Length: 297
Image 1 (tube, one colour):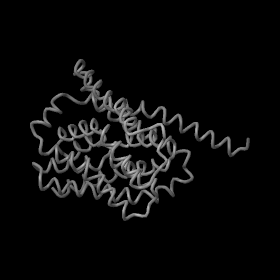
Image 2 (image 1 turned 90 degrees about the vertical axis):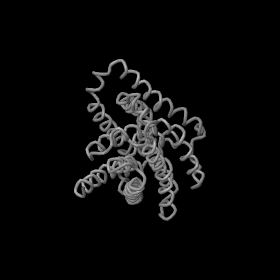
Image 3 (image 1 turned 120 degrees about the vertical axis):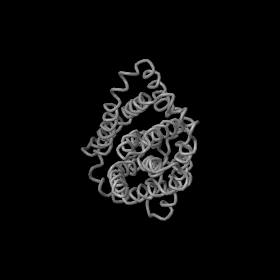
């Protein structure tokens, strides 16, 4: 067996480790989301539905639609196109709640959007991904994974931990409330660790990948925050809600997107490249967006 064969087997083994541990990391992140929630976050949706429904509409429908429009006019491979739809289909990340607070937005609305759309993602994400794969002619989907299969896996690592977190909080309210900031920091650290691990073995090609997916990811990110902001300006209650909906549409759950990518396409790194590019970009653009808003108000 030559050195190249040994090297390829080593890469595959390391990627298998990443794909096996990633669901645990995602489950922990969703558990911490559940720990930050109370029943009031869901009651608020019923009492003040307008802002919530607009945010949900913008994230679940407009964001993937804008991604498809960009893909239609952008010369990227089908694999990268589907990868971009994966991050576009992902719900907002828990860091959107932190940045919403920093931006002086409606934190309660942000938490409600993150929670409900995350729970709905077990349906919306598989539908969007499998539909986009058909649309762009991608046939590499694992024969062992169906739309129902990925929905069940997402239910186990997304919905169950959120519910469990809410139950734990109910019985340890004071302790959990004091540790929420620590959990948010751990969430960011976990994503960084798995992002680095997943991309380490492709470091020689990473610049080429980023050049292919970076610009379109940047365009999607900025376009969506601007579109969401001005749609919210027309229909929502005020400036706090405008900021919140824009940030929710710009800051996606990269860990969930990476999990979905590895579950559907295995260790093929191409499908995860847009998630990595978007994840690097969204924090930078998010802070710039907040800075511009603070200077203009």
